Image 1 (spheres, helix red, strand yellow):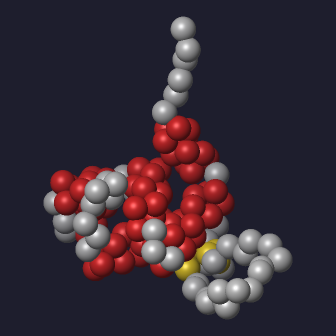
Image 2 (tube, helix red, strand yellow; image 1 turned 90 degrees about the vertical axis):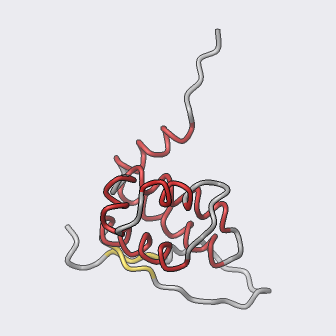
Length: 124
């Protein structure tokens, strides 16, 4: 018998254990959204929400029905930009980070990956 485990559970547990990993995933979600891959971005955001604030508390913090939050963060969700911005803001707060965006020439090669998230100085 083959034993398998849902990969999403493993990712969520790692995000809970390693805040730096969660921060990098938030950076990746922002990059994916801005680079035209909203489905991937929403999938990552869904995992981040489950690992940090939780769907129920996110619904309360955004004054949005839980089913609307769940639908937005699903693979077939219809992004509401105001709600999406609120989710990013709440995740920034929970992970104690600020997101900074910069653009680079499309043909340029970067020497190495540089996360676009910076930890706030007041974060412990």
